[in-house]
Image (cartoon, rainbow, N blue to C red; front, side, top):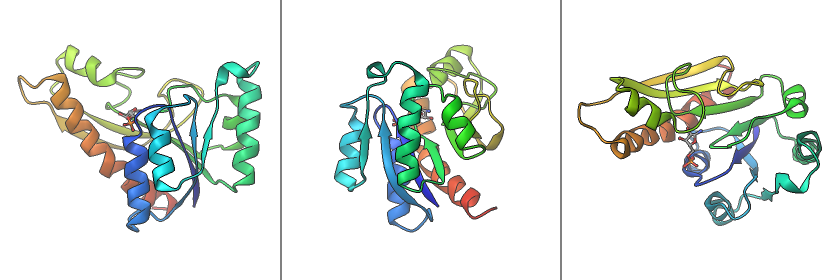
Length: 188
Ligand code: GRF
């Protein structure tokens, strides 16, 4: 499958997906990295990896419909089959949802429906839960609400700091996201 990765920040999941494609673990082709925060570190990662970058500032468009229409054209030009969100900090709107039904995927660092939204790991640690994890799901119009594809749990050891839990969660994400995408693309 041909994919576009959408990211806003650090891009460690973009990197993991790219590396899995390179090593043959993820049978897919990254056609484009879409970034809504010009200058984000993920852009540097994509350039180094030789992945074409589309950076844009939502502020420069009158509405979400306008910038998603621009994105949709770019995705069509690149024959993109799936949109893979990896730390894209913005809700997907009607233009992309209507044109990519069941073709937009997100990863979230909690066991949804617990702790949706920003700072899910911080929320989980503050709540004192003993188990958290990672969820991969189809995207709908809500915030972290679409149908769940796969989840992986992680036990939080007593006394762990938020940083320690975050490290463990990210380590899971970097294996689990490419692996789950490969299964999905292969129809498993
Ligand atoms: C990840 O924890 C992902 O689950 C969430 O945003 C974070 C992105 O991290 N949606 P990175 O930019 O891939 O390093």
